[in-house]
Length: 435
Ligand SMILES: Cc1cc2nc3c(=O)[nH]c(=O)nc-3n(C[C@H](O)[C@H](O)[C@H](O)COP(=O)(O)OP(=O)(O)OC[C@H]3O[C@@H](n4cnc5c(N)ncnc54)[C@H](O)[C@@H]3O)c2cc1C
Image (cartoon, rainbow, N blue to C red; front, side, top):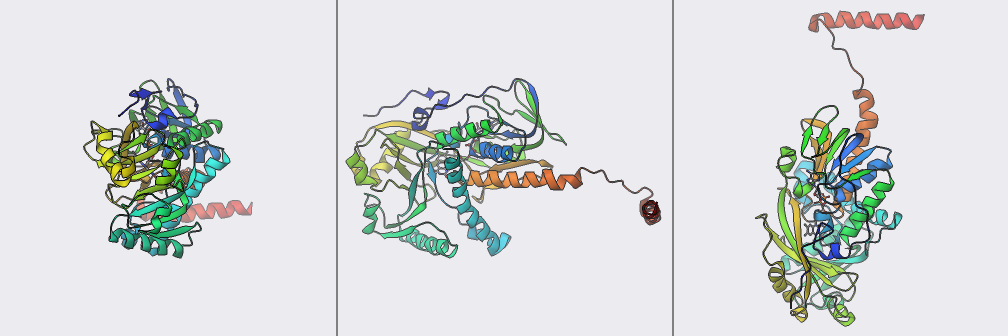
């Protein structure tokens, strides 16, 4: 029998995560005009972590979230914390060279470390468990796994990796679907909404002003950008756009036009018995196969199977998510074909044309940054993007701006008079030196 929860709890989509969210603060709506160093649009992992990184460096930061903290993909995703940034980075070699490819690979490792460090340092209660497996459904996937294994070793990946064939794979998963797998003890799974809520609390503690129900509706660009909401506005030195798949086209078409929202969906079963858990996922790892429209799954802390998949571009949620996902679940675990499904939900992944995260500055406003388009692989990459934006913005603010803030006279008189005036100026300063 199918049971489902009511549509909304605490204004979040009715996901398993919303139902098991930790006690958390609600943040006020912006109803005044404020002035800060950095304004951030978007209260997901990208926005919250950019706020944390910048507040740690002493910036005065305000964050505007249109709905609730973690309302977007960050509070709804599969919770799989997996090494790596982007997909098939080798394709960018002609543009960024082998060194660029290696640098992104290393950032893909660092990204997981940032999440781990944030959770450990601030004692964020979000059910983090280590252990993740890439699953092969066809020989081509097995080749990809072997290649990945060699590349990871070559790059000095420090966590335990293990290859499985069709027989030994039973050590990690009770399914006969797969030809093989690679486990990685440096990746894992967590409760994403509790991570987002915990990180927002860290941001608040650091002095970040967080606002919910405060959608940015327009931006005025300039030396001091202004972001307007329905009842207030924020003026700032720097603005960061982190609305990802939910940003829409109107606020800033350059950014909105580069990210395509794609729907992905999950179900959470009723809690399974200890023996069912031991049968399907004996080592409590998380899993994903290597297709683009992939299955991804793991057990929750209360022994539910969280099973995700599908990939839709229509912008509309399927009418019955469970009906669409149950056959996929039953194919992987026929032993669970009749299990009850307690929750179903979905969210929008932001996808860019080349599936590499987009982290940059607006071409017509170098004090406006953006980060988006993690292509379904953003739990780690958002944290790396936040760090990169904070590094770039800090050096722009602290070093670049020492020079950029000084007004430089344009020599009058055009090219003909420029040299004589320069000579006269230099002479004047030399005379001053002698006084
Ligand atoms: C169903 C699903 C499953 C996924 N599974 C995984 C997974 O297992 N592992 C993984 O690594 N990644 C996964 N992802 C991807 C990952 O969740 C995202 O890449 C990541 O959460 C993006 O974070 P973000 O902060 O950039 O965007 P979001 O979390 O989407 O946050 C953007 C926020 O901006 C707000 N916003 C938008 N416009 C405005 C505005 N004008 N004013 C104010 N606020 C605004 C939105 O309300 C939203 O809360 C999944 C995504 C989905 C949808």
